[in-house]
Length: 325
Image 1 (cartoon, rainbow, N blue to C red):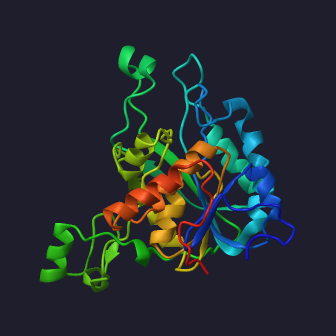
Image 2: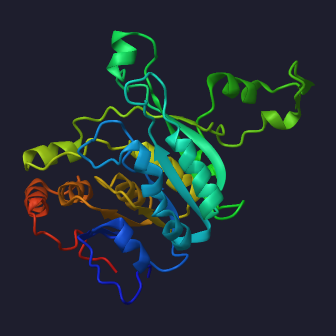
């Protein structure tokens, strides 16, 4: 159990493997037990120059705001656990120069809280629209910003990780090499390529550049939200993003926690991958809409409609999976 006995919190909804809480995460964190979470995976509101409806902090205050969470996040994470933080970029107001808040925050998380930077990743969304319009579309002095930085942090230099769980299909050229063999030799770069290079390891090791287009604008979650007049969360990351890190950094049964759950993509993916999950979110509308993700798409039509109507109700807080143990 991850909650302390004196916790005053009750879940807004539950599933077979997880619980979602409607609350202020900063107030909720002290009621979690020490070293109870395997993976913290989140994409917080970014430090943008314009306020967004999902509650982003102003750039100048952002690092101080986020650092108020850091000691508690460090405390609840297991020794072998990981903290994955997805952060978007921002321009300085009125100037075509970039903010460095993501790097300032990284330095503080490492220097002040004691996290290690296990590795940096880059989340590339090729479908992102050109922005900001002033510098990219009007004056044409910058190119479009299509990459978020992703900090993979840990409590020790050796967090749990296994890249064999996230291998990619081999390229055509590599498949040909495996089929026809490879003659060991010294490459012009100086790398000594041995015969082991032609061994089939089940797939290619992925790079730290994650190319994931975020183009889903009419999926089941969005459709059901619109049908029932619930606002769709405007800043969802693609399920493949959560899937990569959950597979890479945890085993089945591990506890995955999204501290800014939004539409609870993290919880939904964790459930599909047989991980336990925990979600906290400050907006009831976003959390209410997130329940649609957990309605079994293979239910008979009548039962699915009945479940959808029940889930859409504001006061619906029953378990979506009554067989939860």
